[in-house]
Length: 332
Image 1 (tube, rainbow, N blue to C red):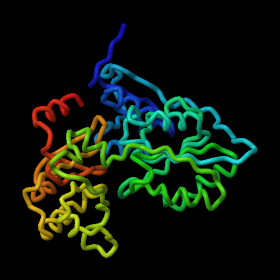
Image 2 (image 1 turned 120 degrees about the vertical axis):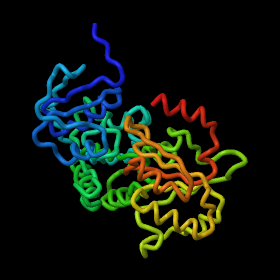
Image 3 (image 1 turned 90 degrees about the vertical axis):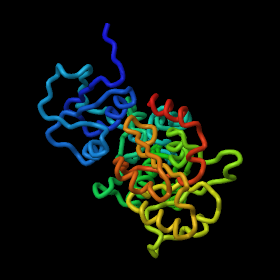
């Protein structure tokens, strides 16, 4: 009998076009994953750049505890019914399949078509017969315009298909789910929503950082850091946040973090305010670093924190016992 343990090496040979879910299943099982291919695609290169997989061309099979092939043809996807289709917007949570809700997993398993993002829990797609359409937006890489995604949802539903739109986090927290809802309803398509656990809450929690804590703060604010504070496109009241006493959670703010911290300090927020940055929350590659408002941008860069990442600024960062947080990190 063969036993595997976390940290053993696994090789995925000759990956098919939809190999992402097989890779994520192996990662969730605790394996260190290599993929054998001469021609890695954009999604595989994205996983490699995030430190999730290695890419090899001539592996020694004796180096691996598990060797799998993923070049088997997928069964033909259902063609849909003659009646009207529908779209279900499923929030997939922070990434691991185990953090996808029960209702979300059921929707995926019942789907005729799954339209998914790169940060969705792709391990949940293992073994399903649905057609899988990847519409990931890779930073500085492969990109599917939102208008095209909207059209895909409508077109598949108009063919009588049960369509699932699967993405990371929650559809309505910087997920553009509202735009997808409106596009479908404008076309007369029925829309259901399955909420997901937003990375704004999940990633900090998995790193031992609560966003509220009794006697420390009575609320929190979640903002997009996609554009810096001085950008004309920014609608965030950074000065108001600095005075609010709320915990601040910044999404999509890796590149703009230095400018955000400078603006908050200039607006009067104490430079010594505790801060933390967490990347790949919930995944085997999760990293976190702690510092202060004045130091966190440099600390995150030195630690190699990369997108997707969440930054938390506020006294709640230090609310939990440090020894307990260390034990939590050691179990990941």
